[in-house]
Amino acid sequence: MPNLAFALVDSTFEPFRAGELLVKPASENWEKQAYFALRRAVFSDEQQLLVQDKDSHDFQAIAIVALAGNCGIADQVVGAVRIYQPEPGLWFGGRLCVAQAYRRHSMIGRALVNEAVSRAKELGCEVFRATVQAQNESYFRGLHWRILDHLELLGQPHCLMQADLPSYPLMPRQVSLRALKVARHD
View 1 (tube, rainbow, N blue to C red):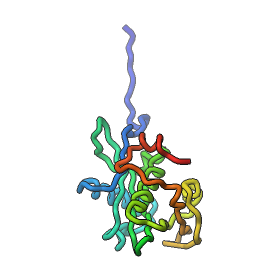
View 2 (cartoon, one colour):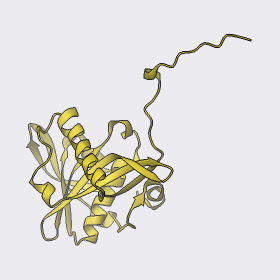
View 3 (cartoon, helix red, strand yellow):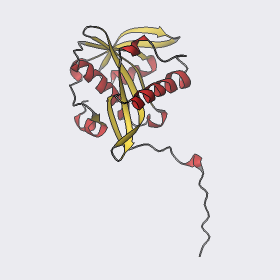
View 4 (tube, rainbow, N blue to C red):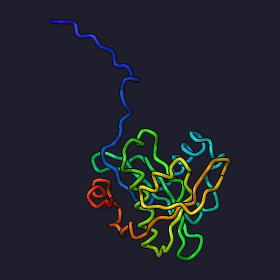
């Protein structure tokens, strides 16, 4: 019998990525904790943009999460965005982020933006805006957004952008990414 020797080297394996994803407002305590932990990991630790990621908008914001899981059980927040209404009819989105291991999954950012804008529309949104890092401008243009202004925030170039609301139909609640692929608009 031949001697079959092999070594399992951790660095040769890709990190596990769940195949089932769900986008919805954070409702469970663990979801909210993981939502803030992901934001802190991206904006404070990785990008070093913010010393403290939380701000006054978080008190009124709706936290939206992309949850990963298996066998129908979601157990990990892999994407996040928040929406809030500073004045009647005007809504803002912000702090859009995706966990590093899931960034190649092309639908997570789109699903979070779709959920954010569609949920705000459901709540009476007439104008939806976001301040976007300049490096993400073309991504948002592809999602039917236009630039209103160029800004510098935290020493970095940003764009004030506005969503084309008719491009965002109201969607059924708790949209899975599988359903979104069928319902998605291009």
